[in-house]
Length: 259
Image (cartoon, rainbow, N blue to C red; front, side):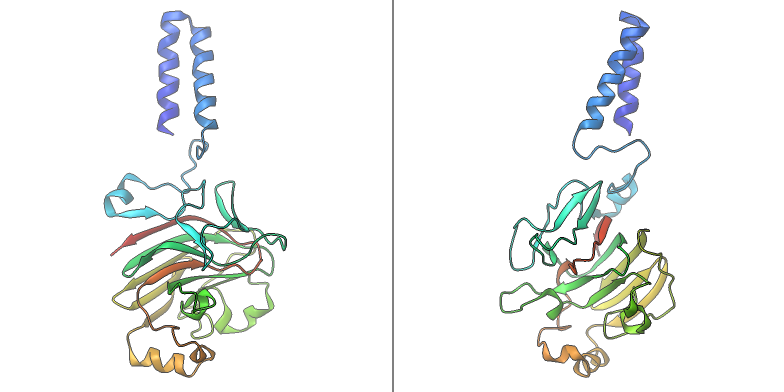
């Protein structure tokens, strides 16, 4: 961290004035104070931070590594829930005593690139929704928002190509086979949506390419189990959702650039 380097430099300069011993002590104390501040992390830890280049390109953090600001429970607002921040991770506790529900962005997005890291517990299952219409008449986020599937490879559902990580859940298998890291290890995902055209990527491999404004898309939805949900897949603008299956999923480095 730049701040720590500056503080150490100040301590060294103080040493020439008040003596090396006390200058060093003051420098160490200042570093300790800086590190104790919320959101501070050890030098070299760049998680949940944007580079200067990313800022210039228009990227914004959707998760700051310290709070759940910018998110709320679907149809329930800012209620306390199983979604907590632990060690710089946005973590959904698999605890039945807590308030559970999908976590939804406060803001809607239309044309964007979304990037995020994720890991999950053994046999875990989760997902990321896009184009979510939040409405009390729509019971759940998945009733309107198509899902980028997240699944531990050891989960029995992994045998179904329509339920593997990186696929559009229940509708399309992976366009190209992508390796998923085992439970407890971080994966990198990317979703791009531009004028209704959607791409999914998993660990650098493109796993979906679909046009949500096409007749082919409408026909696919009409033949699926999602046909019973009138708002599903009908929109190319909406909120982003993180699915709660009470399966211990974690996110970090969640960032978005509007196109």
